[in-house]
Image (cartoon, rainbow, N blue to C red; front, top):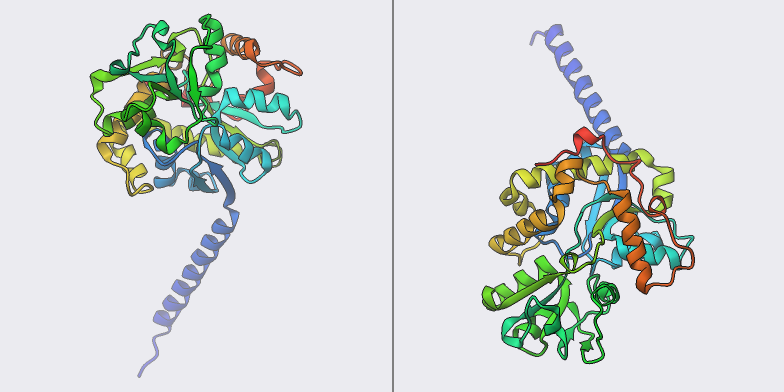
Length: 346
């Protein structure tokens, strides 16, 4: 056998190149910053932007190894991030305001507004006497989960609408039985997120024309909704990771707006029992009613109107005694957001 030196050299060079590639891949893997992120609820339609960012590798492109877990309500992410169990999450900014006032050293801040309008609503049935007129709420029985973000706003709702709730009955029910109880007529209405309770009732056979949704934002409750929140420790120690996290989520939002049906597919991969038609309808409700509002179309996604936010802090103060009333900048910062031109949506 004749030894071909050039061929041997070729094998050696290819081996070196392959070894270098493996080394670079290993270094890249090691460079990935781990981020623990908590949703506000299960993997359902509204979580599509996060699922898309995972599915398309947007987090990895930013050097982030993101793990996303479901939660049991929009208030839970706040305690999770505050405890240090999670670095960031998706939770109710109004609950964050209260939590920070009660725990001034918690250091949690909102860094990207996801729901320009809150999904808080009272959802009832015409057949149980509920109408769009708030006077129809008198004397009714409500399913009101103690940990629900919408129920947390009831004191504001009744204050701005001058409601005497002495004739109303509020039953603390678990999230899993909230809509079933309304579907079975055990309660007259429930508190919840509009896109969740409305869709869940329809999926249980309640006729759409028997479902009445009273969005709190249409009855004088001038609040924001869910936002991306981060811990002070994470923001201070890894500010570039926070910026990368928001860039990736922004890409997920834009992709979700362009093709909601494809975005829902990413959700279904993470929820075996979810149905595409149900989650697609839920997602479209959130996009239309909560995320892509006229203000967002004009000003870009993710930020806040500081004047409006100040008014929301005043409203929270109607029924919550601040130890020290915060300013908008105490709760929300836009320093980690992508540039405005990267946050435009249609």
